[in-house]
Image 1: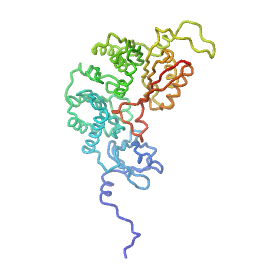
Image 2: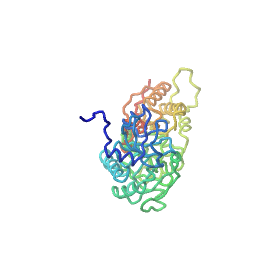
Image 3: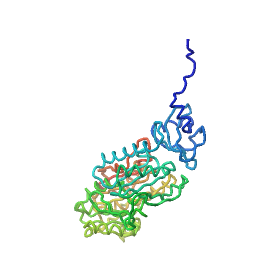
Length: 432
């Protein structure tokens, strides 16, 4: 009779995989998050490595009981030691990358049909940690923030050429986060060619409006694409209105409002370069007549606008009314992130409270406040609480009329909270 107690021999494929890839074993209690789909494994989560891999190599991940969890890229220089890309035994080379890129493109075709400029790959949101690709008409801009992805740039470029047939692919790798992966800055044209003038001002179309992108030195890869859907939605409040677009950048919300029939639109941003671009874009779209852009610190601008010149109100009394000629029917607040880490959240909340307090004072009774926060360190509940505190201090009542999130080309994975960063609300702001 066979000895049933004899250990079952490992399957041949398991043995081959063990030899092919080093194995990273996790400490007890660290596997659940990876099984749920979160791709980041920090140094403190590692129990041991069967052998030391080279940075950028593929490793397989197992829990402390030797159960297979997935495969990912290893980097000893990064706080994120392993970025898990697949729960299957993939080698993470060309066939795997081709499948994931096809999936990413299909998602955009399904949920953002008709868009000609959009984010093609949003890193963790597309299960391609360390890779961002933006499409500006027929030009792609690529960023790699992990060593594993950076080493595979030639393969990624060839797949993107095949799938999207771009005129050019530009590498915009000047993000500060690359230094945490031991990567240098690198900006270049990886495929095709672009004139220098195009690099500084590439024409793009968003929701039928013509914009321009500074691929060479603009924010991120040149333009913020995550508000594309929200800009069209918020414009629905603008017909016949006086609109303020605070932190307007190159006028995304302002120009959508002007096209929707706003009587007048004021855009305010502290960047003179962005304001100059907004004026050019307004003229190119035939919207210069009812738009005005000012280069100013938004906090100072709103503070000055709220000043009535009268005596300060008594404690507990409502603030004095703002003259009608200084009020707006719609105010949009879309500031840059006020916080880059959890330690600075209290300061960020004070900043959010100030701009909301002043925005509510600048709105006529019944006006619309559309407001956004792009820091994942400030969740939607905390953001809403700050808005409510501001309404209390401004003696205003709020009626929430809309919720906003990032455009679908910036997908959110439920297991990866970091993929959800943009949240927004629209309120009807009432008197007391």
